[in-house]
Length: 434
Image (cartoon, rainbow, N blue to C red; front, top):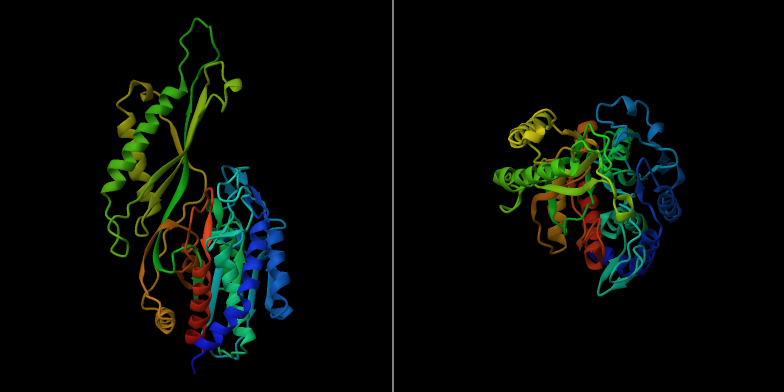
């Protein structure tokens, strides 16, 4: 029996409610602010929506430390930039639409935390948390990354529930905490809490392409410290860390544009995809004129360094450090002192979906049912997908809506693509969990 028409009628009936709910969710500031975060109000907001159609005993709100043994798990990473992460009042939220039994299970996964808005004023709508719509796009911090995709999973459950479709397998929707800034511990908690879900759709933005592979990487800090009193006007020569940092920056650029550029992408990626080294921050001697006035004694550069899924952390680290030693070793500045290079967040691996998994056939079928073109390939960014198979029995594919500017000014999500995502989620559940 086809439910296409029923699903379409349900979406037309619930479209305004979804958009109003998403707008309200975007207005709630759920920024990831290391070592803590403000996800709880967003989780409570979704809870108050879903408890109308999901029984209380099938809604699980739990904190990371409620999961037994999580801090002993090898993938758990307790710090960021040396600070101990704080997880009190930062709950994960998982809802289950219980099946009749003896069926395969499916989860729709997303994260509640967003990157901060940094007090910026935006262009299309000045308020970064407006949740307003213009020309078919909803704007706001987290609209694309990833409140639209996260909420779509819960509304997919609502659609199945409202249409009174009985499936054999359980269908889950989840909103985890602390994905940004290389967090991932919220995802690990959800996986350990429900380790035997058969398959998951992670709703990061892909323009509805099935992301069967993703990149990995980590944030790094290069640090320079001078044995000097700093200041001005002394008779002694004052070594300046800024000059050394400039040489480090040039070496980073060379590694990015000459070494990484030559590494060919796996066949799942577009041919023009390449690994990147992205320099985020160059800092020494303060950030404005009033903090200047003397030669500094230390400085740092923060940067992101990527890997493909097949690249091991230790090998990638060794290749990078060996290059920097060779490149910087040509300067007298570094003969007696080599800058420190260290990761400041966890190393995140890339993920790779088993394309022969039965769920993939069900997902392809849902695209065909909807007359949507199905395309699967690698997606050129990192995320928490790798943690699924690392700590549970759940394989995962990445399918999310279309939009632009995640983490940036005027972040938006395209509305039509969200409803296509809900259609895909519902039909995939019907095809897979029947």
